[in-house]
Length: 307
Image 1: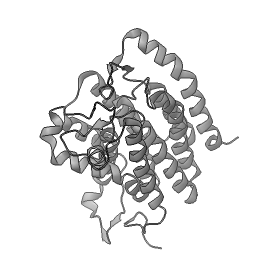
Image 2 (image 1 turned 90 degrees about the vertical axis):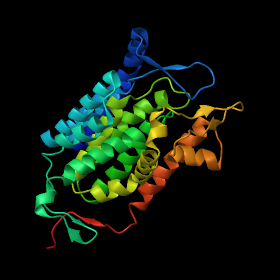
Image 3 (image 1 turned 180 degrees about the horizontal axis):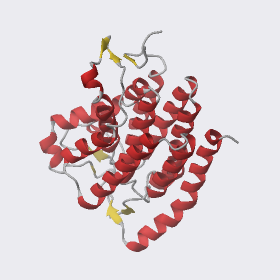
Image 4 (image 1 turned 135 degrees about the vertical axis):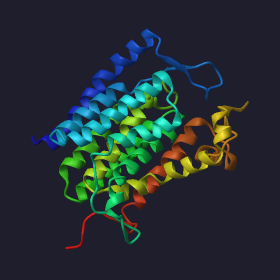
């Protein structure tokens, strides 16, 4: 079998085999966090997706035949996420640090909205895309199954785009990410036993961005991530209230109350109050619809010079 065929299978197997052992070990070690969206006191493992991160990285290593630019960006982002899990980094650091590790992925030719990106700005294209996707995945989060479900949908959509473009290595890399997170999703789904942790959200965002940048697939990734962008813009607009730790909390009937700051979740809850599981399904549906639209919308970013 080719490396492209084997990589997703290895990622799925490693993630599934390591997940149960890691979750049990983390529970024994007290690596737990309170689930604030439950009426009763519920605790979950707080860095639960670590095996999925390692398995995904191994699958990408095999599928890309050791592409150091992709692998180093994903590994560095995972390290940043782990630091944030342990020491709570400043928001500015979360934006700037991922940009540094995307600098080697220079994109020399890009046309955006009909305008070619100047050569003197092209070196910032990959860092900006990388930091946006990393932080977008990290922010579109906070509810059981949302982060891992979003990564599963986005990586599957991107695998289809890569396959359609004839790039089997990139398709296998995206499928490795999807396979590893499919093994974690049952533990993260409502009611969750484990949270993914920022090590997972940073890694998965970086892996998506790095693979897309390497193969010129930024446009479908940006379209698929539209709900993440909307969430980010809404939260930045009410950042002071978001920093005040106002969260969705269950009401007397078990349905979630909207948080004081604006976000995709808060808008949905203001329109139609619902429980956490239904909220996550609604938010994942938005990601899936955005992913579906990426196959039909005309590209506004050109990544190759005309013949």
